[in-house]
Length: 369
Picture 1 (cartoon, helix red, strand yellow):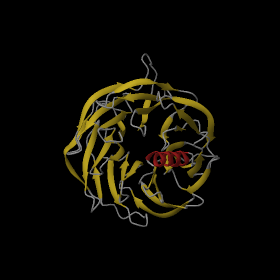
Picture 2 (tube, rainbow, N blue to C red):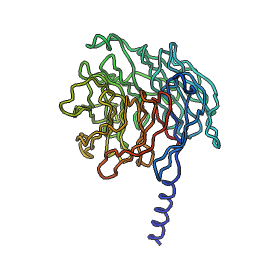
Picture 3 (cartoon, rainbow, N blue to C red):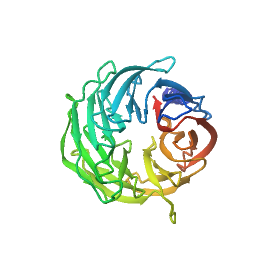
Picture 4 (spheres, rainbow, N blue to C red):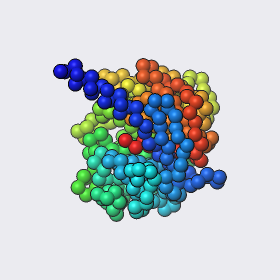
């Protein structure tokens, strides 16, 4: 009987893994392309993407996020002043219907995240160096912002770090803390989240200092929450941390380059992602035009370089890994293309496929689970 149950479970998992996955793309407006959020379907058998279609019109929806219940999508409007919009996802057509819009409490919002229970949305405003928390109503609409925090200070790079630039904001795996990678300050700011009010509150520790000139950009956790990784835009490195879930502290254990030894050209990091199996970390290099892959030590959290994938990649602003861990979709901002790579499940390396679609200035990739 146990063998029958196990076999049935395996067949069910295989059937689920074979189902197509809906993918949404955030973009910058570009002449010659429809303006808004695009939708396509990923074939998990072949890695093919359907022809992209506009799912919802929007102005510079550069970063998007999907509600945990898969019924709603949220998008920034990257402008001055900034805004965040809520959309309902049509379960049949997958098109988007605008519900409402909230102010982002800053200028040029560039990153949003939503809590695991779907009750709070966080937004990072790059130009103003500020962050805000926005409660989410049961119907998916956005309430008035519950809190807004202005960062202050600067760091050593005179061109990029004269003032704060909040570049991303992420929840801890247990949703108790929020981590803000501030490129202008060379810090990760740490806040507590009040789940009832949706407010961001002071935390101790309140900040994690990063090497001067590093330029923190994006931040991610392993699935078990034991380790965290910060990718730095300006000095092309990844910093590995041990995460303390009790107080939100991050203890640095390693810094590793995102570039091959001997590379001397200009390059700037963008996205960082952990594979769903927790074994591999990936980062994007704009300039070197590559996705770098590392192996994660499951006991220590340290990284070992595996290699690079450059094929057809140009200014990879963002990328994402499908929920099954089979494919990596890369958004090439400068070539107006989205590429699909197969992930070798043994080595973790990305393998090129022939699957490429055209989207004007794609800069964010999200899967509908």
